[in-house]
Image (cartoon, rainbow, N blue to C red; front, side):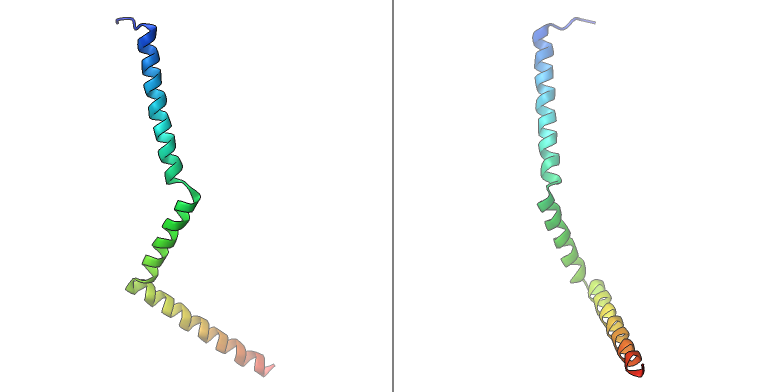
Length: 78
């Protein structure tokens, strides 16, 4: 195995530092709280506006309405 001189080792270390800095920057951008919030909002809106999402929301609304009516009837009996 050929021995490397100090200049080659320094150059390799500098390349490794540059790659590491780039990776850290990419992770910072991907995990930024504001970006995560925006992605979550976008995903929820997309799901809620899909036919299945609208059916789920409608069903939940009907269920809540029925529960409220039931509770009102029970409270009037007491």
